[in-house]
Length: 263
Length: 317
Image 1 (cartoon, each protein chain N blue to C red):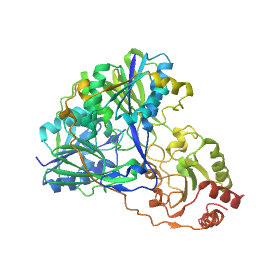
Image 2 (cartoon, rainbow over the protein chains, first blue to last red):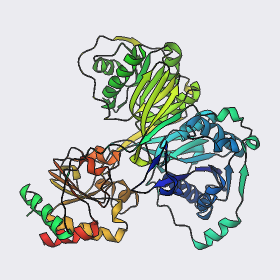
Image 3 (tube, each protein chain N blue to C red):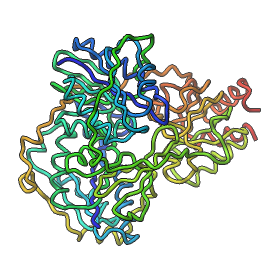
Image 4 (tube, one colour):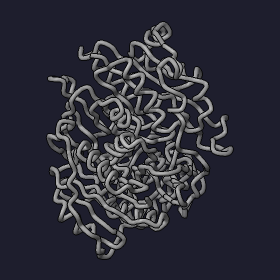
């Protein structure tokens, strides 16, 4: 069985930052492997370790700069990676769900995996829609917000738990091939070992253009336009206790006694 | 066309709150486009649901009587067919776990753009302006798109619709192709039971990502003991396996309403706030004065938790 994992390098933002136009100024931005994708990679690698998968392929859409982040997936155990990038993508402000669907679907159709794992959402634009959209596009079954996957996959069925709101889980059987969007907490993502990091440098990272994967430039024309970005107005009317730690702790102590919840 | 089609959400026999909120969001949008608000109620006790959802502002309710519980294939097919029948400008669904299990599929099938987790919507002719957060709530953005679209709305952002409506309630005969239904719900399970019920606590000491390391949790346990309080946490602590699921406050955990909630090193993501905003008094201890938790805190200590918590333990030991 072959597993494909979609991964994304996301921008991380410092506590204090400035906005320029519809972007956060570069100097306040960092980069990291998307948190949800880290769990998806871990799940795929564990399936491989349990003897259920023969190959784990990581796929990303991103410029050369993101290779170091994507190599994290290789260092944690993915066998190889595919990175799709194109000059046409560099000009796009906000790659919408339809554009990502076109690109990822083309790669998946070429790779023919049995199972696709994707993070529930990306920590930056947080659409939370790409995995299900891709499944519909390529005719796979799917399950969104999966926080448990049985590692047997008997009879071509994935038994999963979907994390609903309010502490309720839905138990669902999904026919393979399928796309599962993976929720944080499904496993404990490993840290890459030094050996893994060294090996990752030698693993295959195949770079493909839109032309290579057979996607026409017109197909990635984004329909959403980001027109404004601003810091949400603080609605805080909290009483802020000032002073040293022992002074503020004493204020809190007084409050707790006043409210009668501590002595 | 200029109509709006909104889809209700229900689970295990009960309509979810967002089903009433989506009526308000849909009505506002339909007023701006000058169209009607259609509501779709799919699966479960649809007639009963339709009666309950017949509130002010709904023009028509379409019931699809097929199965008891949510199934994304049934929802996707029913909504797609309703779109073909009604030709609305916008399809609105809740940005719930189930909403995100079919809305993107509907959008892709219909070749429409999808914009998710919106907190504000405004339609001007063919243009939709959607407000949504990025970077975990650090910024808000507006996104514009032209023409028809599928839009998901965040819960608790619009007030619930009230009153009694006079919508036409009609059964919609959706043609569900069972051969394409590739997933089967086999059951539900409540998680987070066990030794303690955090929703019963009067005083909660709640810890978040700011605690950094598992061994630092000991300090928070000491504080909870000293205060005779109950220990709870935000999601990352449970994801890391440092505390069991029954300690998690938030959308996917427990909703709590203690007399006092002390949020220690918790930034206050919207999913967390959904679970604790009903607390009588909220105290935040956080180094970041701009953290979203400050928006709902009644009292705040803007300082390092590793300095403040030991002082607080001393105070009560």
